[in-house]
Structure formats: structure tokens, C-alpha cells
Length: 218
Length: 218
Image (tube, rainbow over all chains, first blue to last red; front, side):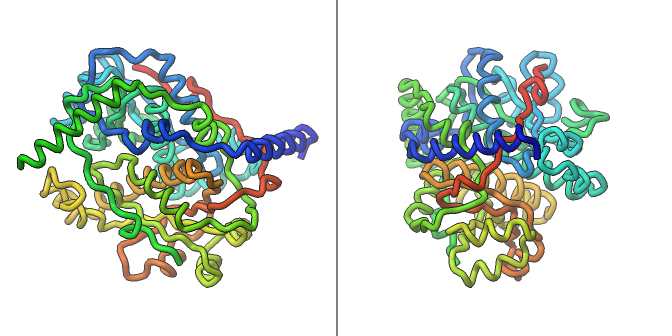
């Protein structure tokens, strides 16, 4: 390991120690905004989302953890009428007006060839890409798992920058892939409508499982 | 739709309108804690995590969105020496001491038969379970995608309640499933070490992709 790497590790430990001493606590308002009172939205105000807001969103979302720093998520923001026309035929009927009325719909995709970038994003193990190079199943499972984790970070980061969010998986992935990712190693995962909500379109909140329904301790 | 349902929808809209008027903004400290300055941890202080903290974690995580409110995530908190002994053989060598030193390791799993619960958790469409009942591929894809989204909510919620987090996917899923989920419809997804970090064990932060590397607008 180089002197520069050792110094960077030492600095990272120092920063983590300093942060631990700060004893940060999550703010209740932010948790309401991101989790506890946030809703999935289906209708949208006629108000645009500036590019700057999408960039701010990504700057937060990108910091969420992925296995070996894989970061397989790729995002296509669908904003123009032309792009919406291309996306629409792949969507279930019920999801078309949600997408059409949203100022932006993000196609959350993942790159099956994410491992080609590992030498750059995961320098601690230059041989890491060999795990995936000749193992399409491992590449698929890791791209889907870690790309989906990033999709969750993306949705929460969108709320953090003041956007309302409505995710959809009711669409024909193969059709969307053919239209947007033909001849590439990208695959669509799910869609996220983004904007400022028309609150008249939501419904009552659906029940969540209790802790004892889904968690156990051994 | 019953009068009670209509009233619940109206109340939900009113609550969403009121929240929109509050114009909530995310707190910078909370974003540092959850995203921008959080680190993946590999070493742990000898300090227990009370059950109450795990319950608080779940109460936040459960509010994150899933498709059709599926909520396929199931969690086994590994805490006892006996349970750690059962988990250890499935783990890659390098991950064993991380698990052994953590006060709690969560097995983030998903239930392939999540659709059996849909009439209860997704009452708007009582026929929703038919989509998955005779389609094992659709059940698998939805369980994995939505269970993974919930795994991401789980990690961020853990940080929100003051825990440090270190996720691991370097283990033999089949071996862990055989040990903990034999004869059930549950499958392991990934593991999350939880506790209070020994900051001496971390490394420098690895590079993230820039917005222009992975996002495009059409």
C-alpha cells in the first residue's frame, strides 16, 4: 500500500472518530419527510423539476453503500415528450397517466457489466472483477441486488431534496429494455415518477407488518 | 368502497396537503448521518444493542415503499453464541470476524410466498395474489426486488437510530438457507452487522461515480 493510501486510511479513521464523538441524532422532521409520513404519489402538479435538483438528489443517493462499491445503478431521466412517447407503450395502462403527468420519470436500471469498472471503484482488490467476468449469474444477482439498494437510496434522496416520489414496477421490462437499452449491458429495474404531488390523487395508507410478524431474534 | 374507506382516503389527502404546506426540508445533520458521512464498518465495540433499538429501527424501515405494499422482507437477528455458531460456516473467511465481533447480525431475507399476505396488506386489489400464485419467476423477482429495497431502508433506519452498519454479501446463501430456512419459503438476501463501530477498522472512502457517468436525461 502506498504512503498516500495509508495517509488516506488514517484520515478516514480520524474523521469517523470525530463523527462518533459528535454523537449525531436523526432529526424527527427529516424522518417524517423520508420515511414515516412520506407517501407514494400518483398525480402531479404542472411544475418542472430543475436539473440542479436531480443532481443534488444523485449526490446524496450515491453515498449509500453497495457491495464492493459496485454502484451498478444507471439512471435515465425521461423528461421530453419524445422520450415519454417511447416509454409509454411499455407501461401498463393504469401507469401511463402517472408517467405522462409527472415532470420527470426516472428509469432505474442496472449495468450487468458493472464489474468492468471495479478496478476503478474498488482499488483494494484489483482481481475483484474476475468474480463476475465469467459468471453471468453472479453478475446478474449482484447488479440486481446492489442496483436495487441504490434505487431505494435514490427514492429517499429524492424526498430529501424536496421531491415527491411514486415508484412503479408495472411495466414490460423487456419492451423498455429493447427501446432504451438495445445492444447494451443495461437492464431496466423499476421506474420512479418525480415531481411535486397533486395530493388529491392519493389513497389511505396501507397496513405495515408489525415487528413480531416479520422479525425474530436467535 | 365502504364509507370508512372513503373517509380514510379523504383523511389521507388532508394529511398529505397539510404536510405539503409545512414545506419540510431535510436536516443536513441527518443526511450526514444516513448518507453523506456514514461509513461501512468492519469492527465493533463490545457494547450490546438493546431490543428496543431494533424495534425502533424496524418502525422506521417498515414505512419505506414497496410494490403493492408487498413487504417481502423477513429479518432474523443473530445475537446468541449458538446462532452465531450456526451462521459462521456459511460465511467467507474474511467476514467471520466481522460477524463474530458484532453484537447483532441481521439476516435480511425475503419470503417467496409474500403474495399469500396480499389480501391483508393490499386490500385495494383482492386479486393481486393471482399475479404471483402460479408464476414463480414473478414471485422471485418481486420478492428479491422489494425485499432488497426494504434492506436498504433497514440500513438507513439503523443509522437513524444511532447504530453503525456493515453489510455483507460474501457468504453462501444456499448454506445459510439450509441452516435457517430449511422447509420454508424464505431465502437469504444479505447480512447486516449492527452495533457501535470500532472506527480503527475502517479504510479510506472509495470513489463514487459522478452524475454524468451514470445519469442521462432524454
